[in-house]
Every structure is written in structure tokens, then in C-alpha cells.
Amino acid sequence: MAATGILGLQGDYALHLAMLEKLGAEGKIVRTLEEINSCSALIIPGGESTTMLRLLKRFNMLDGLKKLIKEGMPVFGTCAGAILLASKISNYPGQTHLDALDITVERNAYGRQVESFEADIEADLGNMGRHTIRAVFIRAPKITETQEGVESLAFFENTPVLVKKGPVLAATFHPELTDDTSIHKYFLQEVAGLL
Ligand code: GLN
Picture (tube, rainbow, N blue to C red):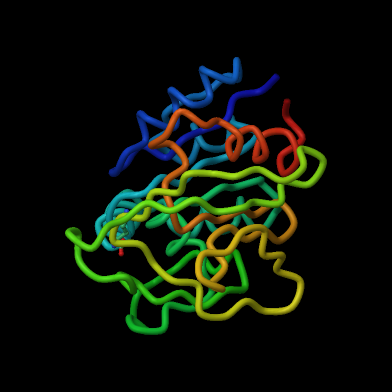
């Protein structure tokens, strides 16, 4: 099985690698377009979307990454990663994005770091069935709009927190921060067809 890349420019990428290892899947921290290109799927971790963008631009990776995703590379963005994938960022309209998923997000919509929280959510994981998941939200974005074709797989207080369209999956919470590997398994197995 080909490796799943984890974008290692900034953020909590190492924890995603640990999740993949737990699932017996091959993971690889990637920092160049060539490295991303050698993978079958990509995870964009949480962190700070503005910093990640700055680094993607500095290393001339933004357009190439956009193209790889447009061409069908399966990708999973969590929190800041979900912000990067979104087609619109309502409260930072000038912020560049990868425009890979037809959703509108509001950054930091639940407040500051101290307002971070955890909640149990019910996720509909396709052939894996329904799972109750402990979701950790840290300065999380809110998905305020989903366009046609975007499936909402889990909600918190009526707001989608896990969404998918084709090979693109996004979570506004941090599935790598608990022991539960089901969201990563869902991405590899159901979205990327790798497990
Ligand atoms: N607030 C961060 C941003 O806007 C995202 C936070 C996170 O990834 N936990 O990029």
C-alpha cells in the first residue's frame, strides 16, 4: 500500500503519523511537492492556517498542491487544514485557500484558545456505520455553509463538523488527539480506498 503523506510544515502533524501507525498504515511526513506527489493521499493537520499558508507560499508549493488535489488526490484536512481546503473563509475574505471543498468557514468561530472544548458527536462513517466520537475543538472554525454535493457526516449543535465531497474530507475538530482511530480509518478505507 502506498504511503499517506502528512503535511509537515507546521502544526500537530506527528500525531497524525501515530494514528496511521496504529492502523498499520504507512505514513510519511512530507514537506515538498515531490514528496506529496509520491504519496497516495494527504493529511493537512491542524495548527495555524495563516502560518501554513505563508510556508506553502514561501516554498512555492501552493499552486502545485492545489493542482494535485484538483486532479483527485484524496485529502483530509483537520481544523486549520479544513480552513485551507475551504472555498470561502467568511471572516477573512482576503485569506488564500486551496479551494478544494465547497464550504464556507468562519475562523475561530467558537472563541479563543481558552474557549476550546470537547463534545461527543455521532458520525456516519459509511460502511463503517455510526460511531460516537469524542471531538476536541481547539480555536475551531465553524462550517457556516455547505454547497451542493457536500455530505455532512457529523454535527455539533446542528453545525456540520465532518464533511466530505468526493475524495476530500474535512473535520473542524482534532481526531488525532484521542485514542479513537475511526476517523483516520474512515479516511483511508472509505475516502481514499487505501486500507
Ligand atoms: N484557529 C486556527 C486557524 O485559524 C485553527 C486552529 C486549529 O487548527 N486548531 O488557523
